[in-house]
Image 1 (cartoon, rainbow, N blue to C red):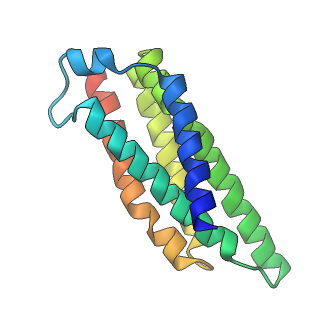
Image 2: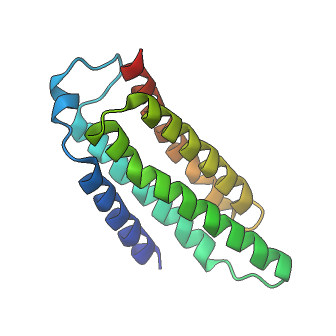
Length: 151
């Protein structure tokens, strides 16, 4: 199950990469302080989607025994799917459309949805919730990059 979740999330990342287009302007332009080259940013995205796959696998493995647990798991999956939809389109906004302010707002929405997902998962799948922390750090980084291109 872990392999399937990570593979599925990597495919989502590939779709996001295709939507995002080329990072040539990002690499050739003046980048803000602490901005990593696009090759390293790609590795960070891969790690982020791997983390998401690990977390999703942990949620999937949980077998609810009450209606309350079933509802909680359903809400967690809705939050996960919502943040995934936003994160796969961030590159489109930042790289292809070149709207860094909107990309910043998008990253903030992803962050909020991801925190809500983490909070919803922690009561029944602690490892699946805690593994999201490095992902939140990554989301903070893409928010920083986005806003620095505005300033």
